[in-house]
Image 1 (cartoon, rainbow, N blue to C red):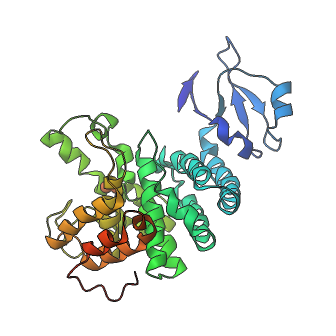
Image 2: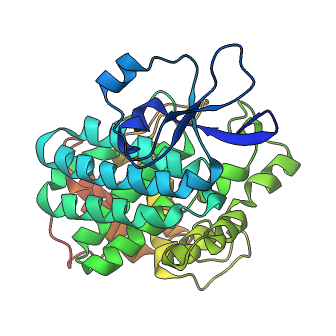
Image 3: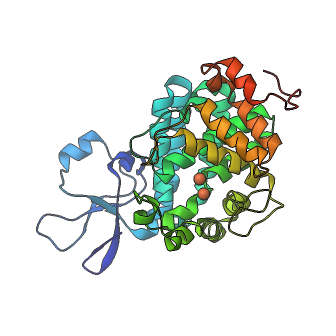
Length: 335
Ligand SMILES: [Fe+2]
Ligand SMILES: [Fe+2]
């Protein structure tokens, strides 16, 4: 948000301009204090339009158009995402997801989170058609590891888990959405604490631990289509032995327990922390196995999740993979 001459304006991302046919766009002419109309709603923003109407600086929208912009961008984006899943590689799919999820997480209390359900539906539909593309999403690393990247990865892994365990499509979309929003409370934690390159103080740790509750509040403030994501946001750091946070729950929702597994796995396999490099899938599973043995994670969800990753782990050696489950009853799982 930018205040110009006593009024608030929202700068527009250049990559999203192509979606804003039905939106008024504004600009601030050089050496002027007054924002003027740049393109009226109904006109297309094309290369020709840009050539005829050059401008410097940013284009802006009015705050009251924010939700409409998100919807318009979402509509265009869903079409592009479908196209990319069917015709392009995982890299392009991920770049597109980053754009739209980043936009939606940039101001999550503005009330526009509901539109993300459509995105998750496209991803779930894409998994049915091109499972390799969606499976590979979580493997594409980014130098800049953010809550947005982490959330997209956790969503892709959760959708893969739901397909492996043959959940119905409605549940798969709901769980995918819960995965996408599980850390939405982190959008309100100061970045200096989130990315502090050192051990956190007790106080800072407490601030981080407030993100499940903050996340539930943000989701509650949005429309009811995202309220199903609240248990996942609230409970993904609870542990079945009662040692988790924020309230030491022992009876945890199914999605809370699934996300506890998927979230830890994603954090271990990504090159996100400043202290260490990413672990191989098989190494991350070994660490999670210890959490299961000490009864902090649910064994059934862990085994199902591990098997939903078999394509990733194959390359690390199937024998080694089998060893993880030695002595465990995993007969219901195909190898
Ligand atoms: Fe979290
Ligand atoms: Fe997380």
